[in-house]
Length: 502
Image 1 (cartoon, helix red, strand yellow):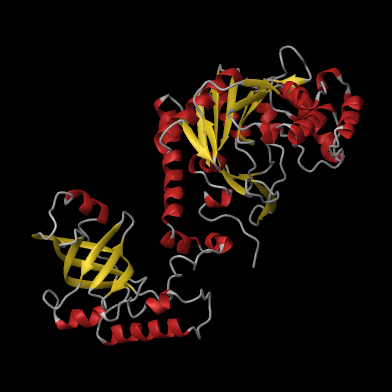
Image 2 (image 1 turned 90 degrees about the horizontal axis):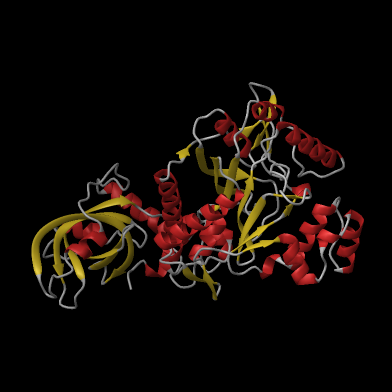
């Protein structure tokens, strides 16, 4: 164990300058400067990363020394025999460093004694493989790159506090390879999604994050104020209405955006106030085309970033192989409860909720009653992928009316493991119908529904210039990443989740 390993096992200290371990490190910092060494230099030119060295020298026999000179850099994670052996970790992996008087002058050996676990250092030296088979760099020159003033948590117990992992994500990433892999896989998922769409002729666009009228979803927005214009603005709850304006303008028949949305709602293992979504629109398509598109995108990223279409989430086997079943919402509710909401009027639907012991508060119409029954009795049973169709018109103000039942719309949500991961419509492009839907939403808002959508006159004006028949799709990237990384909480897949103040 290194001289500083006792500090490595110390409890976390978030800001106490009396921390004795920090005081020791501050003393070493002053010693470095007294030696004329800058503990925080501006750069270090390295030639290799640990993983690349492991791959390049995979066939190097044990006990072999080379004259190959390399320059590597990383964080000290273990320090044995007073610094003679150092485990140096970079973003790609680990390389062992051998610091010995046979290779280093006295001033460099003195520097080794000032190293602590957590320090970032640069190393120049010769590659060898030890008799025990460990790929090693015999250090001939060492450089302090960043002196760590705080000890890292003890490896096995120091970062067991889940909330601390989220609050100090940098420590979580240093200590937990699984956390690094989860966020790296998230990056691959987004990259594969983007590449797949671009290869099929979709144009990536950017739309405003600040809206004068929050729209595109039923949600409560965050509000801010622009001083120069002296006007309130809203963090966007969805990019939908701006994306469809671009389709009206003929920018492209296929547009998409991957970006943040913000909703002023509660937190849960599946909800964060800011979240990332993919939203796309395709002219001359309908919601049936969007079902196939959803399956193709999810299957593609699962194969590329999660290793295949069969995965395990929380110990449950999930099969993402398309095609996925398509089931009506009312049909699923009837199957679960015996109640056929399609045979009920509004009053009867509300009465049915009472008989099913479902909370009726806030239920204002038939569609909300059907949705409440679905949420209470069906959602969490939808483990394998399924497209739920036949959404009520009452709760879908931006979707085209159903072709067979005017109470329903051409909308689906895709569920896996009891969660919604996608939402799509045949987009409503009749400006008069859209105005009537917005007006109904405004009445609901006046009656106390804070999530009801607002009337957007400019969007209605855009529709009057003609939006082609159009399919629209939104995929919640955070939840999809949860599924593909077997992560139990949305906070595990967001680098810096929203947390309550201490």
